[in-house]
Length: 415
Ligand SMILES: Cc1ncc(COP(=O)(O)O)c(C=O)c1O
Image (cartoon, rainbow, N blue to C red; front, side, top):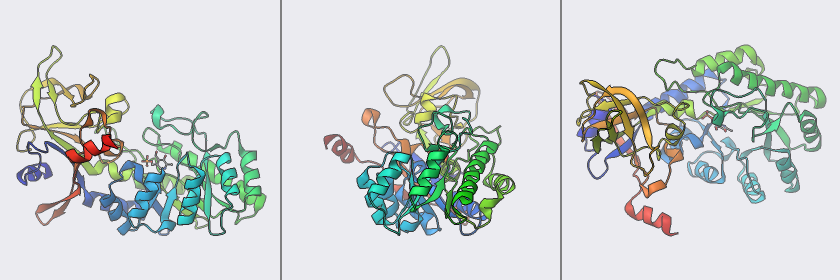
């Protein structure tokens, strides 16, 4: 019996809550273990909260030894609320105010400045000796296949260019003795492995240059970011974390040598494959292009899929009302979400079995950058997220997020 069938027999996906996200907590546990095994034992794996900010999930990761990467003050608060040791938290926002910087320094978290101007502001704040601060560099290795996640282009908004601003960076290291780390996040989904590796290589080349200029111990931390893609399309094989570590070991062996404290910030690779979203089919309409099945999630959950369908693929499967894979003749199917605009589509004319009203449609690999990008358009409540673990011959479900109540929703727009 599949997890979906078990969930339906357990009473989920009823009329009151016709859709939910199901998150495989065992799979996440296993993937984090693989990550740990792929890198040296003392690497700090600061998992990117933006990929999946559910506190219950952050707590599981922290209990397993993860640190957390916070891309905003809100995420920093989540990281602290998760019980993570502040020393294992990385604060990365590209738009930090002085107040936020001071608070982060007080909290004792590791800070990656995003610009030379931010370094200047940190200097004015007089960082204590205990402060741990790095600077994000842009290795300028070019873009990947998805423009929106290509952050190593000449015109990227992130970090300080290693191509144009090396002299200024060297001056910063000369002027600020508290600046002791380098950070690079070359890109996310859409980058080939060799480019991700090249980004780290360029960062480490700059670290060597700093060593040549100011002595070997000038920096103590290298943060290589995240960025490993997920194989959303079944026929395209994606690199594994082991492939990435092997490629790094080959091309940038220095980071495995304990010369610097090593930080990683993976998000998508850890969470992406760990969840599926399932919705009852509310209705099926006929159109000249084939049937349109209307379900309860769309662009609100899968923002990128709806707006940039060529960049962001998700496998979608059709099931009967009990959750079994549906059989029958294939049609040219469109699957539409519930939102009030015509682009709210998660499948645009793919050959699939015609679903029935009351049946189930599942979108796969939705564990990263889906509910964390939840849209409030049309005021549909944030969904239930149900965790599951495999037991001897069965599945245990546990609520990770109970979903927004009607009252929560009204309060949000009332404040
Ligand atoms: C600075 C930084 N670190 C880590 C990540 C996580 O990347 P991914 O989820 O692709 O591993 C991102 C993604 O945007 C990022 O900007």
